[in-house]
Every structure is written in C-alpha cells, then in structure tokens.
Image (cartoon, rainbow, N blue to C red; front, side, top):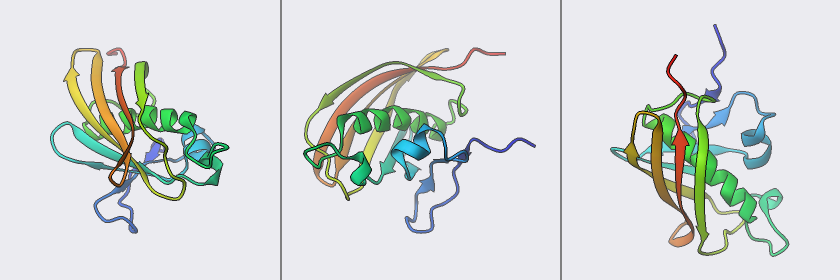
Length: 150
C-alpha cells in the first residue's frame, strides 16, 4: 500500500483542526513553511494556519512576502483537498494574484481563509484573505487546474 502524501490527522493541540503535513518532510511544505493546519468552514470554505518563525522573517522582522505567497499557494491546494476536489500532487496553479495589505508578525499564527468561487470541468477559481487575528495581511485570487481524467 502506498504511503499517503499528507498527514491529515486531528491535531491534539488545536481542537477542530487537522494536520496538513507532507509525510515526506524534506519537501517544500515541510522545509520552508513548517507546521500547517487545515479545517473546513462550511460549504466551499476552508481555513489553513501556519506558524511564522524567525526563519520566515525578512530584515524588518516581519513575515517575508515570499513566505506569504508560498503559504497562499499551498492554502489553495489544502482547501481544494478539504472540498474533495483534488488529490495531492495531481493539480497545478495556473495563476495567483496577491495584494499585500499589511505585514505579518513573527510568532503569531497566520491564517488563510479560502473560498471556492466556481468549479468547471478542469478549473477551480478561488479567492481569500490572509490574516493574523483582526489584522489583514493579504488578499488573493487564483486558479487551479485539476488533473486530466485517466
């Protein structure tokens, strides 16, 4: 039996959240972004959480914009999995537009709220907000292309 690509078991330290960890921790998600969690928030809405550390900072001691971009990209895939629309590793990002609104703070959970706007035969259109508490860090919209049917 193949090992699943992700550990999505319940997180004992965060009730109501599931782990969103690659089982191969040497890949991008594990080495760059670190611990992430995911949960469903109703029909076609999901939320992902990451935990910014010093390694995620820029010279202003804020969350680096590249980390925020990478987190958003991964969040769209995590949400798509929560919606039951894709499998791990089978889809690709076609476009991603991000508007940076404020600086992310190191040491506070960073959350991406993702909403599915529309699903077509091959495409998923999404949008969302990245925030920390009441502060908005970024807004985004993106498109994922689902894999070809075999």
